Length: 596
Image (cartoon, rainbow, N blue to C red; front, side, top):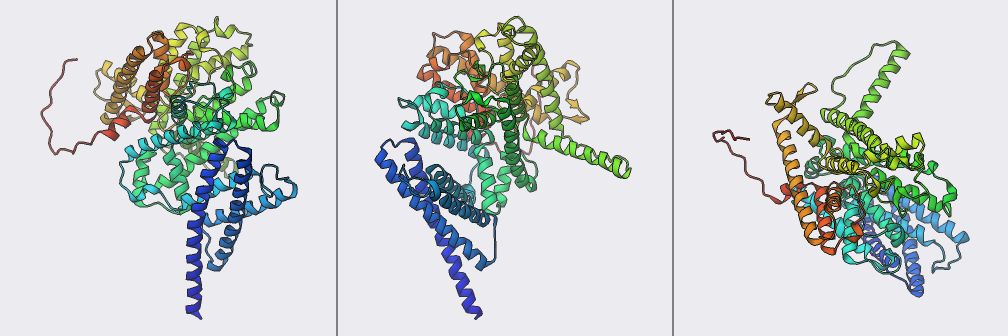
């Protein structure tokens, strides 16, 4: 009897393996067909046939998932992936039952509405791929090189999707424009050579939105999160690699950090989305769906510091130009996205411990328990530098623009909000509530500096990073005082960090100079300030422009594409990925003093 039971269990396990492989293959084929159908197909007859075929696949998935769920009770084990499959089974069955009660089948299906069917197929595909673990587990890659390659692959995939005829309204987009837009989306820049509000369809805009979301956090973060979540574990090799990719010092904390990054991202996007939704007048939209899509689009692009908008003139459009509630919600999103996840985690822990102390004091009369270094050293540097940049940017813009753009029918609250927006947006968010060409020249020069500095490391923003700027400034102060080291917050900054900071600054200035020089050759008809502004904006992944992006030549656009890519992955990161590391030496050469 025991042998028969084991034989039956082995047979059930083998059946599940076969079903897993078949589901993966079928869902992959169905997803490719759906992409072709949504992005390319314009034939009504073929539309009906494709929808009918996909409906049969949908029903097949419902049956197979039901069989797999039943076999789970036989085996007696439920993993995360198996639980998700059981929930998907309920989804497939519920949508089939609900659809059959009211759906007329006008577009080729009889039981399932296409939109719900597409969602189910893609969700199933993500689960099945993630169950196989991380694809790069069987290969050796330099983590830095893998990070760079992941962005390249995502850019190429986005370019292919944007080239589909149904991504654009009217004429199909050219390859250069598609590559430019895909790179801008993945690198969360926000520059565009076309008007995405008018020239892209809802499908094309959705492609941009997905690229921004994945590019903002990094495709490796998503791959690692879903790979661990559904496959049930990481190899030690994976954990070592992710310590470098996400900047985590402890191997044991890699998994929890991945979860926190994804969780915090979605939480802030949802909270920001609620604020954006409440700040908008429903009468501005044709229906509730348009209202929701506008909210979703801007919540994601704001937190990811992308700067894309579905409005023709961005947030300077007359319908939202004086909506200060919307502007404050967007400011909150891109500032939080630009702070970095480490400082968010530290702040949460700091507030949680103080609230716990207060509760213990009030409830039980216990004394406060002080614990050292709740706020990490890096978090303090980021917090103080960011606060200084926000305040100085706001004050300077308020003074410089008081008799310029702030005179445009703004109330006093409006002047403050607009000045705060202009003073914080250049640090990689890319949104604008005023025409950039209307700004005073000193303000434009200030924006140059803010764009170059950028956001915090480990955030969704770009630039040389606030920590690099802070170290360079502290190094100048130390040299002026005659000190040979940097000391702050009771700690000494390592010489390696100072060297990296100076290297990043040098590489950024060299690359910016080369890019501006190349643009002056490819687009000699543009003035130098506009070309330099475009280059700084691309390198810092800001997305602001003086209005020449769509006027650039194809060669100029390719230079901006390269600039955006290098700015997103980091010039020093790219150099490390391409240059072979020198073997460490067990000796030191005599030192010499260089006259400076």
